[in-house]
Length: 413
Image (cartoon, rainbow, N blue to C red; front, side, top):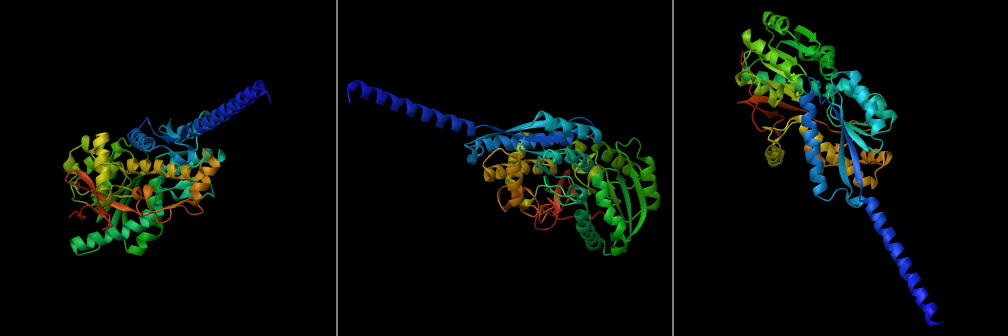
């Protein structure tokens, strides 16, 4: 073999090595790409505050995930958030879902959509697109339709009602020495409120020996709370289930109760969901009128999250983390775990990973019950409830005892 042939072989070998190295680098670069997740929630209208808090949480969680190296199973792929405004009606929420699946075909999953009625419409669209959706909406209907791509991280409306009402009755009895005999309901007609009230009216009143003396439903946003609270004052139930989902409606109702002499703890008021616990409520009304008001929620900050909550407050400037913040933050961590298990940015693979998931660490610390596992319907196994109460200007977890940061105070009439 002459020198010329040897030189050509060496050159060819170097060229092949360069091609291989280039291919390896290209493959690594292809792996280390951006993976898109979606947030669909109200960014305008009466529920915009909650949507903005959800975005804040998603942004912070994704920032932390990316700073920690992204999705390691995908070569350090970075997460990126795509936001879609669900607006203020079911129709707009559905239209937003249609835009989401059309304009963001690379999404591997999404979270949202705040109101249960919005979520029911949105998931009709995302199910057809086989897009995995994590939702904190309460309605039992969300995971009662045989869908395969919807995963509900909250306790359902039925579970919240059935678990909370006996606990509230026990609180009342311990505080006053007698069990309540009458109850009133003032609620809006959104799906979450309807889901919570349905088992109460159907079975729990009889089961607990309660008489329903006030039963009023309104369509949000509320323009005049006077007729509703006049009815409550005239009947004076032992306690009131007060269930608005709009912060402004909560303000109107509580202020009217104070005006009619049944506020400030004179009539025990228990809500469902986080609207009545939002910082904006405290910022826009007399904080004394909030004292003692409770709400049944599927998530809130607990004793176990004390250090994490301090970090959240420092980074966001928010006085406390609402359930929408905590849950959306946890949802991003669930998607990270699913992508690590899937090893690729593929909707079907992410959905499969979600169905197989069973975690007691990581994202599990952000959900009451301490476990992230979904049953065949997409409901989170062991999802628990919390009861939160306004005490000294701050809503704090008071039930169950293992999660409480303060003891409950039953308002005395």
